[in-house]
Length: 109
Length: 213
Image 1 (spheres, chains in turn brown, blue):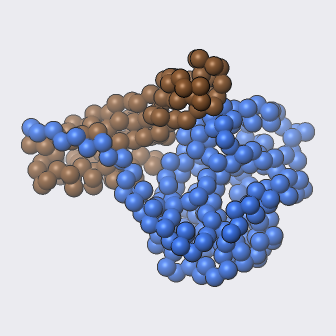
Image 2 (cartoon, rainbow over the protein chains, first blue to last red; image 1 turned 120 degrees about the vertical axis):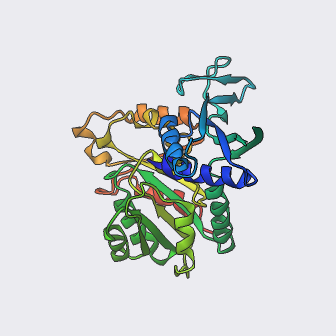
Image 3 (cartoon, chains in turn blue, green; image 1 turned 135 degrees about the horizontal axis):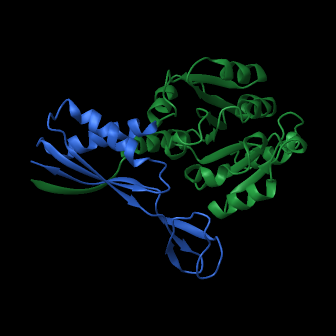
């Protein structure tokens, strides 16, 4: 349900960055640790833009798989958050990718 | 059509306000906790115990969809508390917190606790301007929560396992929860607590007092 509040923020930023040109497409990257559900986000964005843009605008989402850097230096991606470092087997890691929900780009007329 | 590369966080508007909140708190030497859990895990009971110990050193902003029940409980226990009734929003935002700051009486306050809406999903990724995020998990909720809700448990600086007095009556593996918490965030602090018997309260208050300036 928080996807609606995120969609409102995305819509505001996209409009602000569009230089007053009609928006045609918004591309969004959604990290697997961001807590954002892509289908809900897309639904809300389409709803928000429906009234302004009769033909609608294209909402593209790309899932960003979680990527970690281990204390041993190894970088690895994983769909299983409980997977240890494939190099040393430990969980001493920092998250490099996967927390974010970002507006990657917009397309305007 | 022309393409404009942005790479802007979807929550950048919230995050800008969160930074302003953070500057306010730093300027006023107030340490801020954002407490997140599912409904009924014992957040307010924990805050009542903290209020009894800290009195006017503690301020609380508590969020609920409706009623001032939680703020009233904390005020009765001895600390200043205000309620945000969201009317429907399932999480607090930095803007909601910012709107409260000008009207709050922070005199004597050293610790501010923001008690978020009862929800393990939506509040976890919203920066409110806090110093640390706390997740509360009770023994009656099952021991799979950390892995089912990684967005919260990878971000929590501390996890409280509450209602440990009920362990003889529930299937809850404390070691499993601790191990999963450390796998998700290897620098997390995990506390066992019973708000009913007060077991574990000393250790929790030692942790809190370590942040008092």
